Image 1 (cartoon, rainbow, N blue to C red):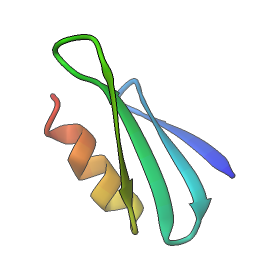
Image 2: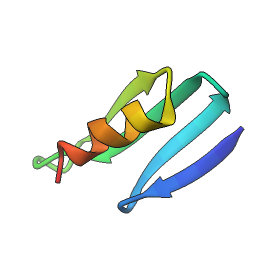
Image 3: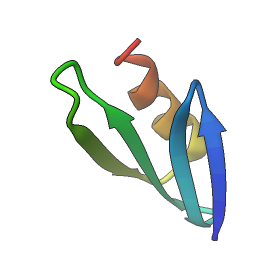
Image 4: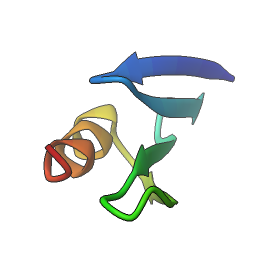
Length: 49
């Protein structure tokens, strides 16, 4: 398992096609999503600014 910091948010890489991203939303709550590529996780983080 690797952890990647992207724009002050965390992406956890479990394997080459299993990623989970975490962001803090406008309400201060943590949201997460699972993705099959690193670029998809980064794009999801990008939508939060």
